[in-house]
Image (cartoon, rainbow, N blue to C red; front, top):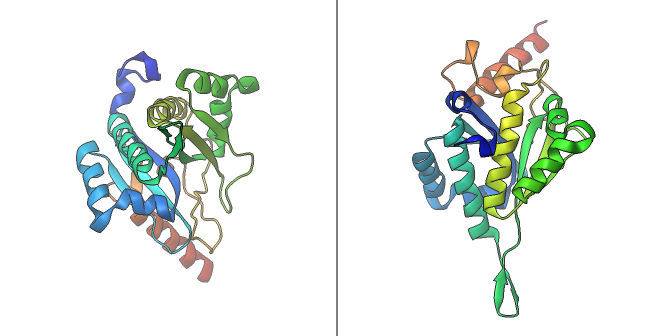
Length: 226
């Protein structure tokens, strides 16, 4: 990976966590029959992939690993979504596939850097990758995160995600982040900024879901027994 995607060699060793908001049909596509697809993506990308529990229409897919592993996983996810969800429309004998859409979940404190002064950075990303990028104006419910929607052909999406990751690696989240959880109805629970990206400190060595469970348990204990 060279300078084309904005990442240098030192950043390739960083553990990156990318969270994506997906609908049930998209989740089913990624999991595959008997979990075969997600198993294949995990093995070939070497990234850790977890999908939030719950029966709500939306789920959070979390991809963690080296930046290279995360990009491989995102690439496989994008092409799988195109394969399964692209119904295709016949136009003069040729089949035009609808654009693939990924919705990244990013702390609002990092979105300013992603947009750039007077929108310069997001404009640059759009022009150099050919992907459409939109940063939601409103926070996701009960959180301090925003949805960043990326759409286009898989190759454009992959290049776009690379550039977005370069920005968020250069501009860590400020203060505490309240992560978005589609099925959460107990109100916001604070997580430190680091836990949103690399699960360090007291949560080292456990999954994000397990860390979230521990955080929620502590929060509920303090709620019932102040």
